[in-house]
Length: 137
Ligand code: TYD
Figure (cartoon, rainbow, N blue to C red):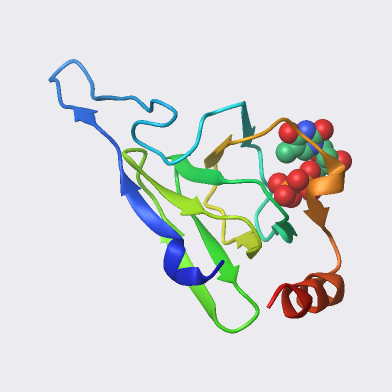
């Protein structure tokens, strides 16, 4: 799994003078079924989230409100991506280390995930992640 597989996904946007509407269908607009939704909110200025990788989880990260940065790292290269719209998301495949920071005040980060929460699916130690990456090759 590499950074090249992580990409922006444009979501359908129904523009309307009464307010816009966006929807996401698991397996249709994103390459996995949705088993879980979680969101980060009330993030204090300067806080950092993430700091882990997942073994098998696929995710779509959306800035539902405000903005923040996602730093992706596949063990070879790192990329900083700014998210600030609710009509596209960042697809993150398994085995990618990610950090989230630079949250604007009042921002909301919504994550669509392919599986239920499972602590055993996490790498919380960067060294363990890198050594498992090497052994997968
Ligand atoms: P974590 O995934 O480390 O948060 P982030 O990556 O956004 O910084 O999760 C923080 C805590 O919340 C951790 O104790 C696990 C718990 N948690 C759940 O119980 N269910 C969930 O779906 C998620 C994402 C986290």
